Image (cartoon, rainbow, N blue to C red; front, top):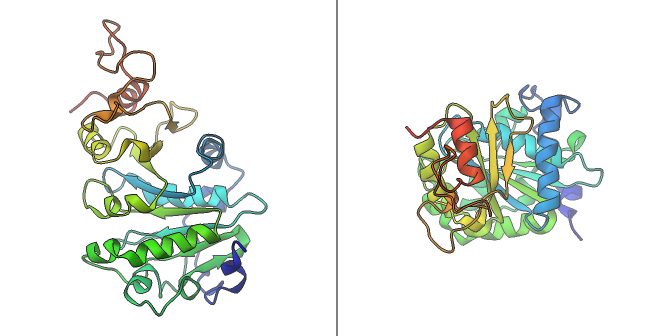
Length: 283
């Protein structure tokens, strides 16, 4: 039966205690306008990506808001009455999920599970029953997590979590800075890329997109863009038939993605237009 771990977790409830980060609006202020923006993302996931349950949240650069987004996405998914959601801190270099949630106990965690096959998910997962949310903290920090993330053990743990939860949300390191998020690509159904509006260098985002398999990208979330009613863009860009470099420039039926965006020639893709609007021209 699904979700049996929730009923019998040895780690249940032991870590909640300190105040949560106020930016976790889906948990601390679910009636807010900001929380509604995450409901928009939830709706897109449920309607357009219903088969994608293991979702990694990443960014091109540090400080773009990936952890805040991952936690708010998990929190908004957990608002369904029968929801069973797991948030995993997969940033083993600079873990933040436990601190943001106010957990007082964060070990054992994922790093401990990876190094000790005698431990099970039940030993490390903590429940936040008030939010129908379960948490797998990172545990001890790993300066070089490469081998741990490459190990079959990680795949086993994620597969087990996928069988026991409706959604598993993974907070991963930035895509360009380190290879960690790329190492787990085979285990996840898709990636959500977080972009800081007017802050993330466009060239860096282009590099991040070119590092990712086109079929794995669910969409982009723009943080800090007041001009957009919703910060989410997804399914507005497609693969360029197997070409890797610049695949994200492909059009969506309105041109081939090679226009210059000034009204002359063929039109650019929606994604390219959004990038120009939110990030500015390449620099």
